[in-house]
Image (tube, rainbow, N blue to C red; front, side):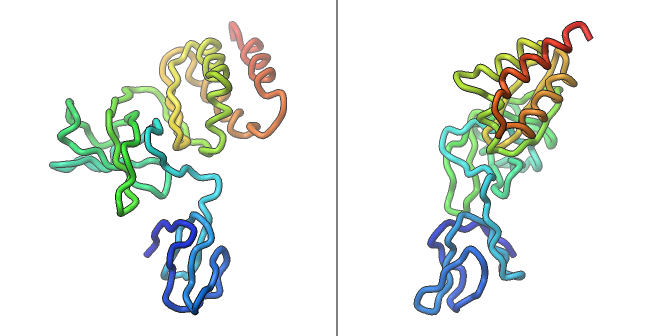
Length: 201
């Protein structure tokens, strides 16, 4: 069994000698945001992964359609849920949806609202920590990608990107390149040069 824990959360009523944890009064507490595997007695930090926040825009994939709700894969250890009564059109399993984070409930499930189905297109997963570079300052990078590929590109803070229309293959190549080189200098100029070299190809 595994569960998401936050810093200071009790892991065990006894001392455990594991990484990313501290022992106080013969009890073990987490020192990081991470996934605690009780069966393996291990704590894996979620460093670099997406931590949901209210009003985050995310892109999810509907995993299950139930009578009163939909479960949504969010490309993270967190599961998403959409309450059916707030959805105008019934969703189907496999639908790609853009949603807004309403709240995180007591079971650490992400409650989503305002779902919009993204029809067709291609979905890409990159590290959530790289998403700000895909967007760019004042949306400059994402605008450059859309202008250079004529694709519509939607970006989720959970590390999922959706593209449709225009040159989707080129848009995919650029986005994955940004994911790999987000930490390097001069990325915006390299993307501009790369797009210019692909004109008419």
